[in-house]
Length: 327
Image (cartoon, rainbow, N blue to C red; front, side, top):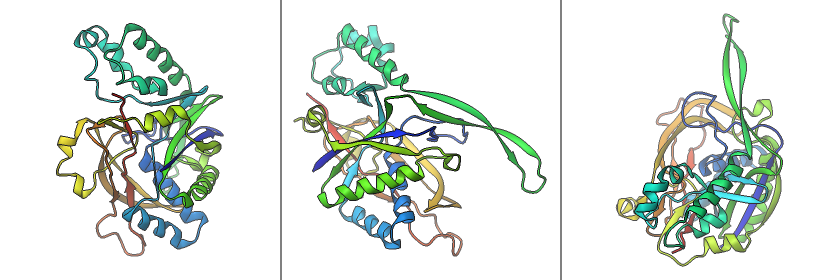
């Protein structure tokens, strides 16, 4: 597979909804299933009608490319989720530095590369990781804005609040994409460009989520080392939904993991439907397995939708993008 890194620089605020019902809750990253849905909607808007359906069919059978969730970069530093497996850390270190280690959510890629390559973490190692994580939190600011909505019948106004993320200069989001079919490299880049014009995430009618592709290049030597280390442990860099043939041994294969449930409304092209998709569970980024994982597209089409409301099946992306953990 050919692996590329793409950097996105946002032109204004973004609204990436966090788990929950409140619009104030926002996160700074974009999960892989959200990115996939945004790409498919972009194809539905700008390409021929059958293009999205044909690509979905390819993903069901043999995906031409897979990708990570979108993570933060800042001032030349790239961050990845901290692997959940900490068995190499001594009990003394865990006892003395447990709070500091628990607060570490993101690792700069050199720290990610070294996470399992040493017998134990020193105080200096942990201090360096904390300093780099401060650069992570300094990459963006959160803002809560009041909004007014009018009742369609009574015309009475009510106030609600909405959360936004602003990325600072030299900061934004990046992702990794691995192509098994080289013919899709330029097509993916073109779709990503068009997505940048329409925006990703919520509140797009207010101008949120538009971006410029800062770069789209093959991964450098550090990421190559991360992705091609010889090991028997893997960390997941996307949301993962196990394929049917993976489920029987899943509990034995996963070493450390967390689960998130996703639900929401269906959007097709530019049209948001008053139709809820089925909720679905995913293994989260940072989870660790004994071996490589595959995943699948999950059919979340609601049962018996009203006539003439939905003309196609609805899927969420659950393919695993894994990185070997250094020994």
